[in-house]
Length: 323
Length: 272
Image (cartoon, rainbow over all chains, first blue to last red; front, side, top):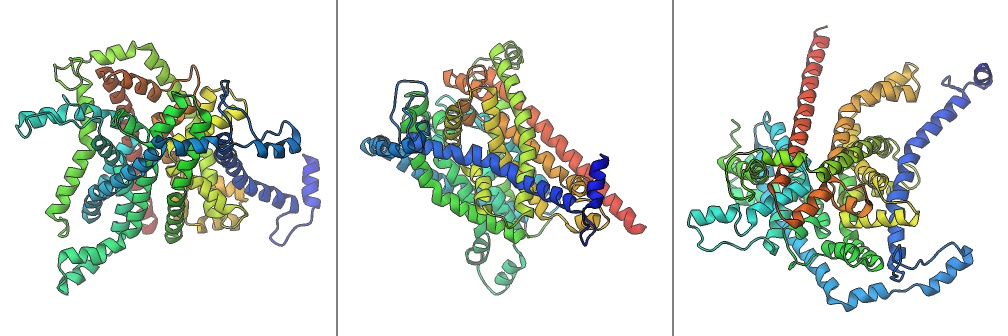
């Protein structure tokens, strides 16, 4: 202790009265703030992707883990480079040969695209209504939109099974009121997947839309109205363009996870519907083919890399504006 | 009433909220159903709650889920807060682009990809799958959500408070714990709650990364749903919803009270 004190007092004081060791400690602590989360994400987020890529190039084997290793450092650096000759792209070739995978990718993108548009159509009036609501009740409305997000995703999807079943609540209601005479078959169809995605992702759409619409200056609309602009064209010329950042953020927040969605197509879509998240899951858990499921994941990631980068840019821009 | 809040606005809000809440309400209602069918009302009964508590498998899974949730949310809150500080305070360092990319990408990354890649990491480093691997996976996912929540608070933080403390001679670390931390505490608490519910909720990543003896509640519910829909699952879901609802409402009441107190303090300060 006394040594430390003498060391500190002996070190030359800098202009703002701090000693060199104290500054070093501060700088080190400052670095730690960056280094700890950085290393964590590198190891648990980035490295796993490299491993997925590596295993997608290996061969299936009946073993645990069920693949033959490639690009191993066990034989030293030379062995690592020799491994390049043995890389096999069979898993990717397999993905192109079997139409199942191609169809699954295409139908996932289409389903996610349609669901995103539907979510926007459902979410926009809600967000608009919230933004126009009296300021005193806006926080309550906002909490009511966020609250379902806190309850389990699985539970919310499960709840729809009881509603959409052939003998479910929706059909009971429609049959008893005489609107239909035959029960509607909705569960285990693509319609059920659309309903499930719109329902589950609605808060993700409403929140960015609301924050864009709330910032809007409503006197612009009144000015347009005073100048004789009909409400519909005032909406398309003023409100919608101003809410565009919210529309883009909301659509990306719905579209990207929806493409790889597993729970909704599995529970509501049944076995007849095709989506890539379900294909990957089955490849992994039912067929235990780790290399092929890795290849499926790599292609899915490549498919999503552009939307994900758009999302990053939108996030970064929003952050700049907040400052 | 605001003049611009038209009948159309009110209708769309009412319909929207009905759409959001009706399925959950129906789920809760049918957990009290006497009949074994989840869609035909057979009278009021709490028997499914009784049988739920005698279902050892579900109870074990619930205990696993709570342990994973508390540990992962706590570690994720620390890491996420550090990440948020990095994002807002250190605007220039090498690899910042990569860092912000790694914080934002997990928010939208399909869970099947995250789950698969983490599993392959655990296999590659020879780690046995179980409670530990699920917890590590959940930390990685949820710390990014915590980072976003805390970051949004830090962006609006008045840095002159910190500068004043440092001018008065407080070292940066002390300044952080005495000034910055108390101010951003509400964001940290809601970050923790978000992390905990996300962990409580996750099926896909847990299915990939867990092993024998570490079945979480969503995994258990999922496997039961696949066998058929029973009111017992409705009862389990209702309890989960109740826990989350109580937590969220309590947090908002505490927040509101603190806000009122702050306003009173400000008024008192202005009056001198």
